[in-house]
Image: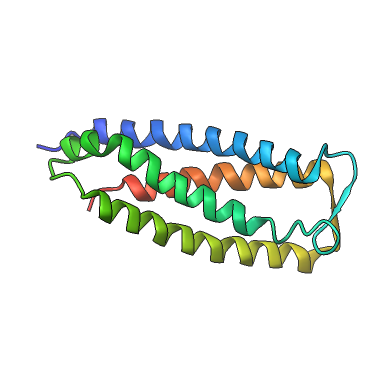
Length: 147
């Protein structure tokens, strides 16, 4: 019998953890690449903020699909009443999520660049933090779902 409440709690906990971790990583990489948010950042040259959505989206999706599933695969399988997924299938699924997220990151970066030539650094930081957190939680939820 599937304990759906335990499975939902497991997924919610991992979504929150993924959102927090990816927001912190997004903050660190933003500060490393763009510095403190005290100036306007160009979507195109010289800052290339729009392009930065690609590596962020790819890595957030890859790690959000890979790490929680590998860590929790036994608990998820037990709660869902199914056999554990093979590691190879988990890695391939994580790569597929990363490729889809790359497309999403590209579309978002292009859309932002079309809307304005530049953005305030603090607003850019908030956007990147929110993007990393929401994408991480969403991918974690999708990756932990049972089939």
